[in-house]
Image 1 (tube, rainbow, N blue to C red):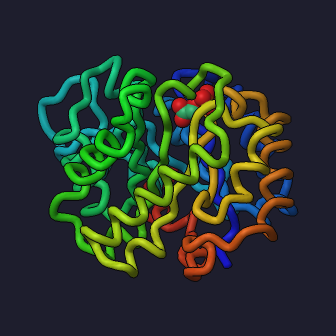
Image 2 (image 1 turned 135 degrees about the vertical axis):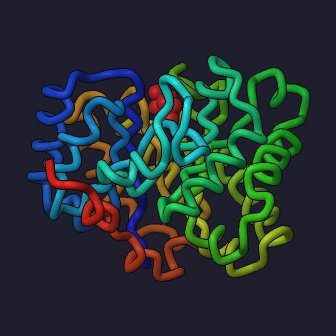
Image 3 (image 1 turned 45 degrees about the horizontal axis):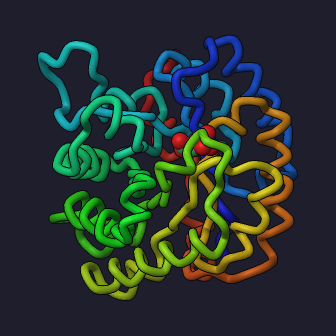
Length: 282
Ligand code: PGA
């Protein structure tokens, strides 16, 4: 039974010194890191130092964004091989802030997903509806479109290993968490969609996280839902003590519910240090 997965998305916050301090504190909690899978997505500027801090621990690193080309004249962008080189094993794609503020399209999300998979990194595919879309009853339509385009050409066995995050846009950074029932209903829909498009194995193995104003108070209720395999946490992960409180609650919740992702033996496939071995020495 795989532990719940908590991903801390620090967004455009923290200096390198602040990131190092938080990771040092996190790394010391080996008890929690045994009970919960933890991935941290710092700013790109902190990735190299972060990789040194987490080396040999169960903490893995994610990039917040990437370009789909391996190299070239793309000023300001970072490629997947460059991210692998500094020790990233995961990469966020399709975060709503990138979709809304930077015009990231479903097709770009598809290309980024493919680039991550080709380089052996695990995509964290974020999907979610806006409040007007939810009010209009379009939630399933919107997330189905986002998932279907992003996973075009991706094999069932690749889908089985990736991570999806259902992040309703109206819940991100607003303090309005979706209720466990609201979130679980979309998670079940996503799993049915994956089963239809990529097969039962992919549907039962893919880990689907919830994101949107997750806090120490809400995480347990969410993780009690069998189809919610973890959480993507933004604001509440910035204070390391609050993040530790979330990990403590998540560790407590892991005995309850046995979601498909948790019974698929994914614990053994969680290998935070996979790509740190390929990074050049600092
Ligand atoms: P939030 O962000 O926890 O601050 O709502 C979540 C996210 O953007 O991934």
